[in-house]
Length: 231
Image 1 (cartoon, rainbow, N blue to C red):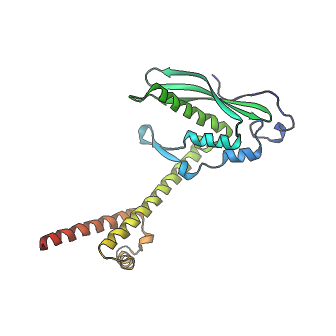
Image 2: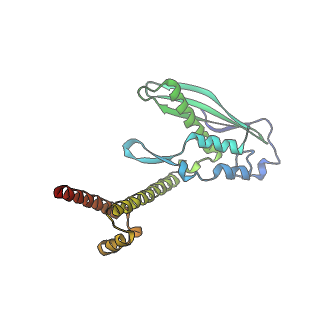
Image 3: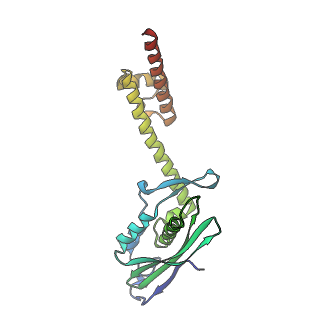
């Protein structure tokens, strides 16, 4: 079974197509720019696959949003074929039809969904359709970088770095709050950190922040025990 951009039905504009080298027939540079725009960081997620490897991904609604923004009312999907692969997964062959000045652009690809225990068959097919929509979208440039190993590795690295920065902010705020509970001001805290680590709170790494946070928590517990002993 074939997949990819398999046909352009109806008329082909001789005026439009030759003037846009490298683009799918009927797709203008402005449309291509929208379709190929980077996936926003907040729409990039991480999941663990076989062997414990993390991979970045985006969801099918983003593809639908891009198609609606680029081809409002001018695209529609159809299911060409579907089936069940034993007891392990289901698959669908999806055809994505896009109406362009050059005619109807037809893109087809396959999507699969693992059959998890207790998953209704209908939900499994929905997952397979979502997978197929994303795979069809790549032929229009949507999230194409997620299918290129080098680009995908860079996306994964950036996502992990972003996660570490967010965690640093969270732990840093936690340190400030724990210090305040013990009557330690930000100025005094920075003085103590500078003496111990030769760094201020804002300059500390995630590992160092975790050590300080743990130390403050331990100090608070010791203080509580001392008060209990006095009482």
